[in-house]
Image 1 (cartoon, rainbow, N blue to C red):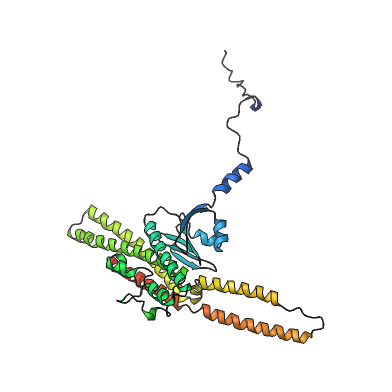
Image 2: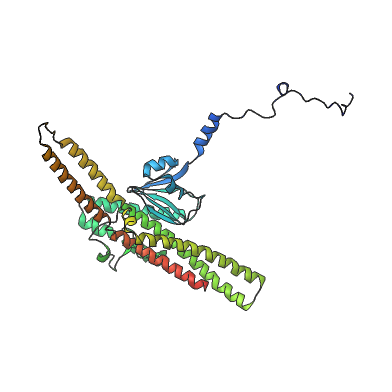
Length: 366
Protein backbone atom coordinates (compact mmCIF):
# COMPACT_ATOMS: atom_id res chain seq x y z
CA UNK A 1 0.00 0.00 0.00
CA UNK A 2 1.27 3.47 -0.90
CA UNK A 3 1.95 5.65 2.13
CA UNK A 4 -0.29 8.71 2.40
CA UNK A 5 0.92 11.85 0.80
CA UNK A 6 1.94 14.62 3.16
CA UNK A 7 -0.28 16.97 1.14
CA UNK A 8 -3.33 14.69 1.58
CA UNK A 9 -3.48 13.52 5.19
CA UNK A 10 -5.37 10.33 5.91
CA UNK A 11 -8.99 10.92 6.86
CA UNK A 12 -10.15 9.70 10.29
CA UNK A 13 -13.18 7.45 10.40
CA UNK A 14 -16.51 9.06 11.16
CA UNK A 15 -17.55 8.76 14.79
CA UNK A 16 -20.76 7.05 13.78
CA UNK A 17 -18.82 4.27 12.05
CA UNK A 18 -16.38 3.54 14.90
CA UNK A 19 -16.78 1.88 18.30
CA UNK A 20 -17.11 4.19 21.32
CA UNK A 21 -13.87 4.92 23.13
CA UNK A 22 -15.49 4.51 26.60
CA UNK A 23 -18.60 3.02 28.14
CA UNK A 24 -21.81 4.96 28.57
CA UNK A 25 -21.82 7.57 31.32
CA UNK A 26 -24.09 6.86 34.27
CA UNK A 27 -27.32 8.75 34.27
CA UNK A 28 -28.02 11.52 36.71
CA UNK A 29 -30.52 9.38 38.59
CA UNK A 30 -27.99 6.60 39.16
CA UNK A 31 -25.33 9.00 40.39
CA UNK A 32 -27.75 10.67 42.80
CA UNK A 33 -28.86 7.32 44.19
CA UNK A 34 -25.26 6.25 44.84
CA UNK A 35 -24.44 9.53 46.57
CA UNK A 36 -27.53 9.37 48.72
CA UNK A 37 -26.65 5.92 49.96
CA UNK A 38 -23.20 6.88 51.26
CA UNK A 39 -23.32 10.53 52.31
CA UNK A 40 -23.58 11.19 56.04
CA UNK A 41 -24.11 7.56 57.10
CA UNK A 42 -21.99 6.62 60.12
CA UNK A 43 -21.83 3.82 62.68
CA UNK A 44 -23.09 4.81 66.12
CA UNK A 45 -22.95 2.90 69.38
CA UNK A 46 -26.25 3.44 71.19
CA UNK A 47 -26.34 2.89 74.97
CA UNK A 48 -29.63 3.29 76.82
CA UNK A 49 -30.24 4.19 80.45
CA UNK A 50 -29.98 0.53 81.48
CA UNK A 51 -26.54 0.07 79.91
CA UNK A 52 -27.77 -1.99 76.95
CA UNK A 53 -25.84 -1.32 73.74
CA UNK A 54 -26.48 -1.72 70.05
CA UNK A 55 -24.73 -0.58 66.89
CA UNK A 56 -26.80 1.41 64.41
CA UNK A 57 -26.06 2.81 60.98
CA UNK A 58 -27.64 6.24 60.70
CA UNK A 59 -27.31 9.36 58.61
CA UNK A 60 -27.09 12.83 60.04
CA UNK A 61 -30.75 13.59 59.40
CA UNK A 62 -31.81 10.59 61.49
CA UNK A 63 -29.57 11.72 64.34
CA UNK A 64 -30.86 15.28 64.04
CA UNK A 65 -34.47 14.12 64.40
CA UNK A 66 -33.57 11.80 67.28
CA UNK A 67 -31.63 14.38 69.30
CA UNK A 68 -32.98 17.73 68.11
CA UNK A 69 -29.47 18.90 67.18
CA UNK A 70 -28.66 21.09 64.17
CA UNK A 71 -26.24 19.92 61.50
CA UNK A 72 -23.50 22.32 62.66
CA UNK A 73 -23.38 20.58 66.05
CA UNK A 74 -22.98 17.17 64.42
CA UNK A 75 -19.98 18.46 62.47
CA UNK A 76 -18.18 18.86 65.79
CA UNK A 77 -18.21 15.07 66.15
CA UNK A 78 -16.83 14.38 62.68
CA UNK A 79 -13.46 12.60 63.17
CA UNK A 80 -12.23 13.86 59.80
CA UNK A 81 -12.63 17.55 60.69
CA UNK A 82 -10.63 17.33 63.95
CA UNK A 83 -12.55 19.92 65.98
CA UNK A 84 -11.01 21.01 69.31
CA UNK A 85 -12.49 19.91 72.62
CA UNK A 86 -16.06 21.13 72.98
CA UNK A 87 -18.99 20.60 75.37
CA UNK A 88 -22.32 22.08 74.26
CA UNK A 89 -25.65 22.08 76.06
CA UNK A 90 -28.71 22.11 73.81
CA UNK A 91 -32.45 21.83 74.36
CA UNK A 92 -32.59 18.03 74.21
CA UNK A 93 -28.96 16.89 74.17
CA UNK A 94 -25.38 17.53 75.27
CA UNK A 95 -22.68 17.38 72.58
CA UNK A 96 -19.33 16.14 73.91
CA UNK A 97 -16.10 16.20 71.94
CA UNK A 98 -13.28 15.49 74.38
CA UNK A 99 -10.10 13.83 73.14
CA UNK A 100 -11.07 10.28 72.06
CA UNK A 101 -14.71 10.71 73.16
CA UNK A 102 -17.28 11.91 70.65
CA UNK A 103 -20.74 11.52 72.11
CA UNK A 104 -24.29 12.84 72.21
CA UNK A 105 -26.00 12.55 75.58
CA UNK A 106 -29.77 12.86 75.89
CA UNK A 107 -31.99 12.43 78.93
CA UNK A 108 -32.35 8.70 78.22
CA UNK A 109 -29.46 7.47 76.06
CA UNK A 110 -25.89 8.03 74.89
CA UNK A 111 -24.84 7.92 71.24
CA UNK A 112 -21.12 7.37 70.64
CA UNK A 113 -19.37 7.72 67.31
CA UNK A 114 -18.05 4.22 66.61
CA UNK A 115 -14.26 4.35 66.64
CA UNK A 116 -11.33 1.96 66.34
CA UNK A 117 -9.31 3.97 68.88
CA UNK A 118 -8.12 1.48 71.54
CA UNK A 119 -8.74 4.01 74.30
CA UNK A 120 -12.47 4.11 73.49
CA UNK A 121 -13.18 0.52 74.51
CA UNK A 122 -12.25 0.96 78.22
CA UNK A 123 -14.36 4.12 78.32
CA UNK A 124 -17.38 2.30 76.89
CA UNK A 125 -17.01 -0.46 79.52
CA UNK A 126 -16.77 2.09 82.33
CA UNK A 127 -19.73 4.10 81.02
CA UNK A 128 -21.83 0.96 80.76
CA UNK A 129 -20.96 -0.05 84.32
CA UNK A 130 -21.93 3.36 85.66
CA UNK A 131 -25.22 3.46 83.78
CA UNK A 132 -26.17 -0.02 84.98
CA UNK A 133 -25.51 1.01 88.57
CA UNK A 134 -27.38 4.28 88.09
CA UNK A 135 -30.36 2.39 86.69
CA UNK A 136 -30.39 0.10 89.71
CA UNK A 137 -30.32 3.06 92.10
CA UNK A 138 -33.05 4.89 90.22
CA UNK A 139 -35.25 1.80 90.08
CA UNK A 140 -34.84 1.21 93.80
CA UNK A 141 -35.75 4.83 94.53
CA UNK A 142 -38.84 4.68 92.33
CA UNK A 143 -40.00 1.54 94.10
CA UNK A 144 -40.05 3.48 97.34
CA UNK A 145 -37.07 1.74 98.93
CA UNK A 146 -35.59 5.06 99.97
CA UNK A 147 -33.49 3.82 102.87
CA UNK A 148 -31.91 0.87 101.06
CA UNK A 149 -31.98 2.34 97.58
CA UNK A 150 -31.29 6.04 97.69
CA UNK A 151 -28.68 5.83 100.44
CA UNK A 152 -26.98 2.45 100.44
CA UNK A 153 -27.06 1.79 96.72
CA UNK A 154 -26.06 5.36 95.92
CA UNK A 155 -22.79 4.89 97.78
CA UNK A 156 -22.01 1.95 95.48
CA UNK A 157 -22.84 3.87 92.30
CA UNK A 158 -19.31 3.67 90.93
CA UNK A 159 -18.07 0.83 93.18
CA UNK A 160 -15.43 3.26 94.36
CA UNK A 161 -14.56 1.38 97.51
CA UNK A 162 -13.92 -1.84 95.59
CA UNK A 163 -11.77 -0.15 92.96
CA UNK A 164 -9.76 1.66 95.62
CA UNK A 165 -9.05 -1.63 97.41
CA UNK A 166 -7.72 -3.03 94.15
CA UNK A 167 -5.42 -0.02 93.82
CA UNK A 168 -6.67 0.93 90.39
CA UNK A 169 -5.78 4.07 88.54
CA UNK A 170 -8.57 6.16 90.05
CA UNK A 171 -6.09 7.50 92.62
CA UNK A 172 -5.22 10.37 90.33
CA UNK A 173 -8.80 11.02 89.31
CA UNK A 174 -10.59 13.97 90.89
CA UNK A 175 -13.20 13.29 93.51
CA UNK A 176 -16.11 14.38 91.41
CA UNK A 177 -19.63 15.09 92.53
CA UNK A 178 -20.58 11.43 92.71
CA UNK A 179 -17.23 10.27 94.14
CA UNK A 180 -17.19 12.14 97.46
CA UNK A 181 -16.96 9.28 99.97
CA UNK A 182 -15.81 9.00 103.58
CA UNK A 183 -14.09 6.03 105.17
CA UNK A 184 -17.37 4.22 105.85
CA UNK A 185 -18.23 4.40 102.15
CA UNK A 186 -20.93 6.99 102.68
CA UNK A 187 -21.47 9.97 100.47
CA UNK A 188 -20.38 13.25 102.04
CA UNK A 189 -23.63 15.05 102.74
CA UNK A 190 -22.21 18.46 101.90
CA UNK A 191 -21.65 17.20 98.36
CA UNK A 192 -25.20 15.88 97.94
CA UNK A 193 -28.64 17.32 98.37
CA UNK A 194 -30.01 14.78 100.81
CA UNK A 195 -30.15 11.43 99.06
CA UNK A 196 -30.71 12.84 95.59
CA UNK A 197 -29.23 10.83 92.74
CA UNK A 198 -27.44 12.49 89.85
CA UNK A 199 -29.59 12.65 86.70
CA UNK A 200 -28.72 10.31 83.86
CA UNK A 201 -27.06 12.96 81.68
CA UNK A 202 -24.67 14.02 84.47
CA UNK A 203 -23.58 10.43 85.10
CA UNK A 204 -22.70 10.11 81.42
CA UNK A 205 -21.05 13.55 81.34
CA UNK A 206 -18.89 12.75 84.34
CA UNK A 207 -17.75 9.49 82.76
CA UNK A 208 -16.68 11.42 79.66
CA UNK A 209 -14.85 14.08 81.67
CA UNK A 210 -13.05 11.54 83.82
CA UNK A 211 -11.91 9.49 80.83
CA UNK A 212 -10.64 12.55 78.93
CA UNK A 213 -8.84 14.03 81.94
CA UNK A 214 -7.27 10.68 82.84
CA UNK A 215 -6.06 10.27 79.26
CA UNK A 216 -4.43 13.71 79.27
CA UNK A 217 -2.93 13.19 82.70
CA UNK A 218 -1.37 9.86 81.75
CA UNK A 219 0.05 11.35 78.57
CA UNK A 220 1.49 14.31 80.46
CA UNK A 221 3.03 11.97 83.02
CA UNK A 222 4.74 9.87 80.34
CA UNK A 223 6.07 13.00 78.68
CA UNK A 224 7.43 14.30 81.96
CA UNK A 225 9.20 10.98 82.60
CA UNK A 226 10.88 11.21 79.21
CA UNK A 227 11.71 14.92 79.29
CA UNK A 228 14.02 15.13 82.30
CA UNK A 229 16.33 12.20 81.32
CA UNK A 230 16.56 13.58 77.77
CA UNK A 231 17.56 17.01 79.08
CA UNK A 232 20.14 15.44 81.38
CA UNK A 233 21.70 13.56 78.46
CA UNK A 234 21.77 16.72 76.37
CA UNK A 235 23.45 18.70 79.15
CA UNK A 236 26.10 16.01 79.59
CA UNK A 237 26.72 15.48 75.89
CA UNK A 238 25.58 17.67 73.02
CA UNK A 239 24.98 15.50 70.00
CA UNK A 240 22.67 15.37 67.01
CA UNK A 241 20.81 12.40 68.47
CA UNK A 242 20.23 14.09 71.83
CA UNK A 243 19.18 17.35 70.19
CA UNK A 244 16.69 15.54 67.97
CA UNK A 245 15.28 13.70 70.98
CA UNK A 246 14.73 16.92 72.90
CA UNK A 247 13.18 18.56 69.86
CA UNK A 248 10.64 15.75 69.51
CA UNK A 249 9.75 15.96 73.18
CA UNK A 250 9.28 19.71 72.92
CA UNK A 251 6.95 19.29 69.94
CA UNK A 252 4.86 16.79 71.86
CA UNK A 253 4.87 19.10 74.87
CA UNK A 254 3.53 22.01 72.83
CA UNK A 255 0.82 19.82 71.31
CA UNK A 256 -0.46 18.34 74.56
CA UNK A 257 -0.32 21.73 76.28
CA UNK A 258 -2.66 23.13 73.65
CA UNK A 259 -5.09 20.23 74.08
CA UNK A 260 -5.11 20.56 77.87
CA UNK A 261 -5.55 24.32 77.60
CA UNK A 262 -8.57 23.86 75.34
CA UNK A 263 -10.27 21.49 77.77
CA UNK A 264 -9.55 23.88 80.63
CA UNK A 265 -10.95 26.85 78.68
CA UNK A 266 -14.08 24.87 77.82
CA UNK A 267 -14.75 23.98 81.45
CA UNK A 268 -14.02 27.52 82.56
CA UNK A 269 -16.46 28.88 79.99
CA UNK A 270 -19.20 26.58 81.28
CA UNK A 271 -18.51 27.45 84.90
CA UNK A 272 -18.73 31.17 84.10
CA UNK A 273 -22.12 30.91 82.40
CA UNK A 274 -25.09 29.72 84.47
CA UNK A 275 -27.35 29.71 81.44
CA UNK A 276 -25.08 27.29 79.57
CA UNK A 277 -25.04 24.99 82.59
CA UNK A 278 -28.83 25.24 82.93
CA UNK A 279 -29.18 23.99 79.36
CA UNK A 280 -27.57 20.70 80.43
CA UNK A 281 -30.35 19.76 82.86
CA UNK A 282 -31.95 17.52 80.25
CA UNK A 283 -33.98 15.31 82.61
CA UNK A 284 -35.49 18.31 84.36
CA UNK A 285 -36.38 19.96 81.07
CA UNK A 286 -37.87 16.71 79.77
CA UNK A 287 -40.12 16.43 82.83
CA UNK A 288 -41.19 20.06 82.47
CA UNK A 289 -42.06 19.52 78.80
CA UNK A 290 -44.16 16.48 79.69
CA UNK A 291 -45.97 18.43 82.40
CA UNK A 292 -46.67 21.30 80.03
CA UNK A 293 -48.05 18.90 77.40
CA UNK A 294 -50.30 17.19 79.95
CA UNK A 295 -51.41 20.52 81.36
CA UNK A 296 -52.23 21.89 77.92
CA UNK A 297 -54.19 18.77 77.02
CA UNK A 298 -56.11 18.91 80.29
CA UNK A 299 -56.87 22.62 79.90
CA UNK A 300 -58.17 22.18 76.38
CA UNK A 301 -60.51 19.38 77.52
CA UNK A 302 -61.84 21.30 80.52
CA UNK A 303 -62.05 24.70 78.85
CA UNK A 304 -65.63 26.06 79.27
CA UNK A 305 -67.63 27.18 76.28
CA UNK A 306 -68.24 30.92 76.44
CA UNK A 307 -71.78 32.11 75.93
CA UNK A 308 -72.45 34.81 73.43
CA UNK A 309 -73.92 37.05 76.07
CA UNK A 310 -70.90 36.84 78.38
CA UNK A 311 -69.62 40.26 79.29
CA UNK A 312 -66.41 41.23 77.40
CA UNK A 313 -64.98 42.82 80.54
CA UNK A 314 -65.11 39.51 82.40
CA UNK A 315 -63.35 37.77 79.53
CA UNK A 316 -60.66 40.45 79.47
CA UNK A 317 -60.14 40.18 83.22
CA UNK A 318 -59.75 36.41 82.98
CA UNK A 319 -57.19 36.84 80.21
CA UNK A 320 -55.16 39.27 82.33
CA UNK A 321 -55.18 36.85 85.28
CA UNK A 322 -53.99 34.02 83.06
CA UNK A 323 -51.25 36.22 81.63
CA UNK A 324 -50.04 37.22 85.10
CA UNK A 325 -50.04 33.58 86.15
CA UNK A 326 -47.98 32.63 83.11
CA UNK A 327 -45.47 35.37 83.84
CA UNK A 328 -45.12 34.14 87.40
CA UNK A 329 -44.66 30.55 86.25
CA UNK A 330 -42.03 31.60 83.72
CA UNK A 331 -40.10 33.51 86.38
CA UNK A 332 -40.24 30.53 88.74
CA UNK A 333 -39.03 28.12 86.04
CA UNK A 334 -36.20 30.47 85.05
CA UNK A 335 -34.94 30.80 88.60
CA UNK A 336 -35.21 27.04 89.01
CA UNK A 337 -33.27 26.38 85.84
CA UNK A 338 -30.48 28.70 86.94
CA UNK A 339 -29.97 26.74 90.17
CA UNK A 340 -26.95 24.95 88.74
CA UNK A 341 -24.98 24.23 91.89
CA UNK A 342 -25.25 20.48 91.30
CA UNK A 343 -23.56 20.65 87.88
CA UNK A 344 -21.18 23.39 88.95
CA UNK A 345 -19.68 21.16 91.65
CA UNK A 346 -19.22 18.36 89.14
CA UNK A 347 -17.45 20.56 86.60
CA UNK A 348 -15.37 22.27 89.26
CA UNK A 349 -13.77 18.96 90.31
CA UNK A 350 -12.50 18.28 86.80
CA UNK A 351 -11.50 21.89 86.24
CA UNK A 352 -9.18 21.59 89.25
CA UNK A 353 -7.66 18.40 87.82
CA UNK A 354 -7.12 19.79 84.32
CA UNK A 355 -5.67 22.99 85.75
CA UNK A 356 -3.17 20.90 87.74
CA UNK A 357 -2.15 19.06 84.57
CA UNK A 358 -1.58 22.38 82.82
CA UNK A 359 0.58 23.63 85.68
CA UNK A 360 2.65 20.43 85.55
CA UNK A 361 3.25 20.87 81.83
CA UNK A 362 4.23 24.50 82.38
CA UNK A 363 6.84 23.35 84.85
CA UNK A 364 8.29 20.91 82.33
CA UNK A 365 8.55 23.67 79.71
CA UNK A 366 10.63 25.77 82.07
